[in-house]
Length: 150
View 1 (spheres, rainbow, N blue to C red):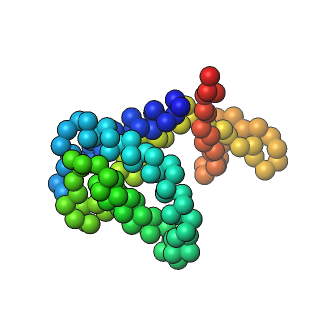
View 2 (cartoon, rainbow, N blue to C red):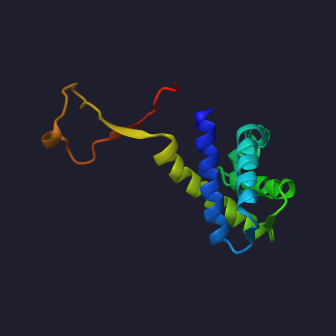
């Protein structure tokens, strides 16, 4: 429940940013912004995985680019459901979906995922490396730490 609320808040912020950046996307009131974010969150949670599964062959052939078109159509779907949320044309929906994905991805990395811990891998011989002996180009693994839901 806590994660759902955070996802909706992140979507509210991302939709607000997109509506201010893309000229073809307008939102009338703040209530419409909240309703759009809630609908978009539920669509992304329940409908998007089904659509991505159905379109998996096309997505593989396009190397994942088709996901941007799926996101644009889902944004158009939200526009059809929520009154007061307007998208002028498909190019506005496409650019808006692209920006929404980027903003959501950045906010998810810092807000939803929480803390990040860096783990240094041991060298080939199994000896742990300290800061001074790490050779240039050594792979450092990054792991997200999620708090336990209470």
